[in-house]
Amino acid sequence: MTTTLVNHSKNAADIVAHAVTTTRAAAPAWAAAKRRPYLLSWKRLIHSRSDELIDLVCAETGKSHVDATVEVTLALEHLDWAARNASRVMSEQRVHRRLLAFNQSAVVRRQPFGVVGVIGPWNYPVFTPMGSISYALAAGNAVVFKPSEYTPRTGQWLAQTFAEAVPQHQVFEFVIGDGQIGQLLCEAAIDKLAFTGSGPTGRKVMAACAERLVPVVMELGGKDAAIIADDADLVAAARSVLWGATFNSGQSCAGIEIAIVVSGVYDEFLEHLSQQAKGLVAGVDYGEMTTSAQREIVERHVASAVDAGARVVVGSTTPIDGRVCEPVILTDVPSDHPAMTDETFGPTVVVVRASNIDDAVAIANRSRYGLGAAVFSRRHGDSIARRLEVGMVSVNDVLAFGSSPELPFGGVKGSGFGRIHGDDGLREFTTAQAITRRQFRSPVRISEPKPRQFDQLALKIVGTIIGRF
Ligand code: NAD
Image (cartoon, rainbow, N blue to C red; front, side, top):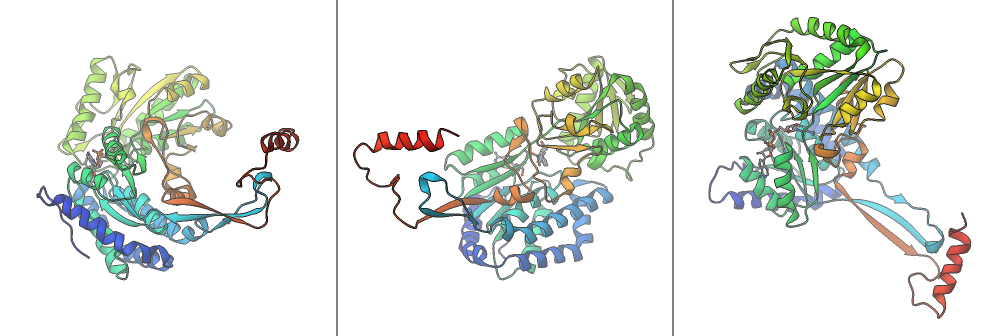
């Protein structure tokens, strides 16, 4: 494979265009191939060299070994599932016709788009982009991947192992660089763009793709809440909320940032959460934060929340020590403060008191985001989950939807649209083609020149047969 390392060279656009052209040339043969064995070979190669990949992820992001291991494990699980399920999801579907087209046989075919551009973030440099790459490739597309500028070598590793495992098909290229290169990829001759990153960048990506009407999947940020009802197992809920808030040092799009606790169990829950948080060990339970910009955001949210009257129950008002951020539990944060409304993306959790479940649901739904949520309740978890304006909910757990490849992953509202993972995630990287075949001449003659007075006859038919039921 060609190594397409792009800096700010004048020919950056040419290099991006070359990656698209190369993969486009290989795409038809890939779309026609039985892709499952190729993708399973790639999975086995990644698995056999996963120590190398985990070390690389740790080196580029500073995350803990256990967090990187979880990430790679999840990516392998998704690649395996996408490889094994694409042919089922893409199989041709025969459709039953209704009255107006009863003389036609009809099928729906699923076709790959062609070349899919994938732009990834730094927080999960394997799991997140692979949610698009695995599913797009399994659906028969070629992929040009631009990893985050903070994790270029991880992106390169993924493309190079694919080239090693599947030398017959040059359908996975990578280009390296910052947002400018991402912009060039959006402007290149791609057929679909899968973006994972922040909302402000997502808007720029959509604007660039709009020029050529390139369809997009938007996996954006979140401000996920956990609701703790008065019938919850409080010890287990505290354990899950703490993990959901601190896993990957809180740098998870669907990490828990707010715990909304019903008044009757508020004090007891806060006590469990605080006790458990005090037991976390830096370097073991959580690693470094990846970027200085992100550390500054966390520091700013905590300090200004305290200025606005918040109480630090665990941690400190200056939680950053070098590249590490200690976990922080805040209470009494004003509802319009950025620590309540914006993505903090650090190991912080704001604990909020709700008068009852209706109030808790209203507080959660006030968010402009709508990625994921968690609900802790022994008896009412499902009914509370159904009232939340989010794309994914875990009941009596956190982030469980991310480890289930059968489930669609994605958000609503400011968290984006479109889905990766699951049947929906495979369909996201296909277009539907409808094919009808006339079997005999229909007296209804919808798609033929009409006899006189047809309009009255048609209305009569509609009135008698369709309108009556
Ligand atoms: P970001 O928006 O800064 O960057 C994301 C990617 O976009 C990077 O590769 C970057 O180089 C590229 N980019 C920047 N400007 C661009 C432009 N004008 N055109 C095209 N590409 C451009 O995000 P980040 O800081 O890397 O990642 C963190 C964000 O990602 C958080 O908001 C997090 O919640 C979100 N995220 C969402 C999900 C999800 O599945 N919903 C998963 C992981 C992360």
